[in-house]
Image (cartoon, rainbow, N blue to C red; front, side, top):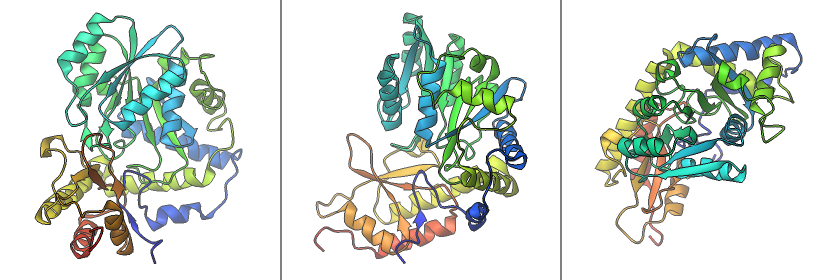
Length: 367
């Protein structure tokens, strides 16, 4: 059936049957068993990030990953502070939109979508403008699949003693990240990405002292990150408002499965194998990846449209969906591309089946 397919997207992702089965029971948000479950998840997230509970804390927030980004941007930057946003794709631009809508003074550091941010230019900006207090970066811009050099950027930001906000939406749980080593102040991700849960909430890892300073600062009631954290701390896992209980239970199962797989390192190896299998096979079929190998992340891979005016992405999408695979349209500004995700409950064998489906598909507008 067409409604049973493998999701080859940057999220939501294909999940295991056991993650889906975890949602078959109902949970009460006030119950102590449920609150203990929430607390265990909060501890698990800190462990994955290499962060100690005395320095860092974790907060769960209802909604999509973008809700979590907005909760951070709208809570942690005071009215007299300024945000520098590193922009080399659609998700960096989204942070600029959020900040400007909230009335935050914002400096977009516009970079090429297919190149790393220039460290010398970032250094000059921070040197020249001491009023910049916060810097945000999207770790993996799924616009292109490029993984930005987080360690290098973090080193520069910390050299100039600015607060670092990392959107690790598409990498946390699938790419090793030690926030303590890099002195990251806030990291944001979502349940339905590399940890392979289902949509419904995201989470923020934050330095305790930084978050404590944000009381009464949020520009939103429901997205008040400080208040959400304070209630979870004081009431030991209680959410301020109705939590997505089924999604939370599924996420705990996904965390257990991440551990059984061998942790983030093992999952990263599987994602890399998926991506290499995909690129090598698509090259053999005549499709050219957008990025060079050294810039490509194991998260998602864009490919140029074939150099043939008859190619139709819509026809290509329909053909692959009929064969059990769903891919993603492109978002790159200057090139016609489509994207294929490499993450989720996906193996190299699944990618080989996809390559067979691509080979069998008729993707011309008027065949």
